[in-house]
Image 1 (cartoon, helix red, strand yellow):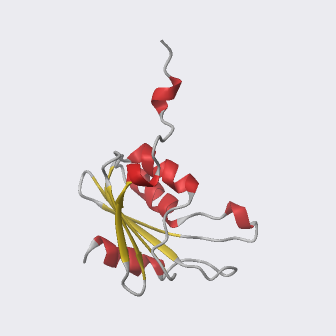
Image 2 (cartoon, helix red, strand yellow):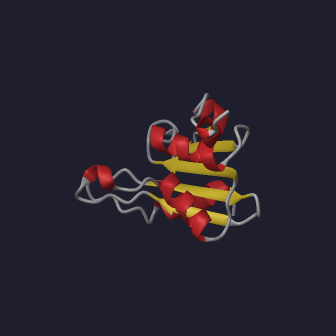
Image 3 (cartoon, one colour):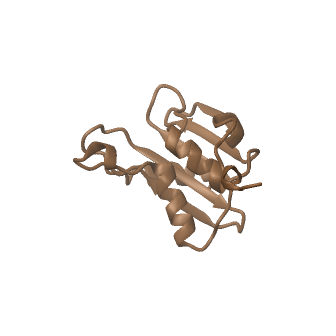
Length: 130
């Protein structure tokens, strides 16, 4: 199965009783392992979890630390880019040239990179003192 197929499969498990907007994400780590995440809503609406954040958490829990590639799929007219918070998370766990495949369930795709999603990302290097 492709990374996008895995994202589509986990998307079906999303818990979205309020928006019914299901998103699935699949990460392949540098170690070659697959990590999946889907969005999870709760009644405290902004406290839900994005699919990308869930996949990153699964990657860290699985013992991997860096993203080699990611695919994200949602049922929308066009491929949906990650929210701002998830763009920052991706920038922290991936290099700028890490490929990102965005897709909708109708088969439309957009290939981009982490750096194209979040140019000038904030990083730990900003904390270093001279």
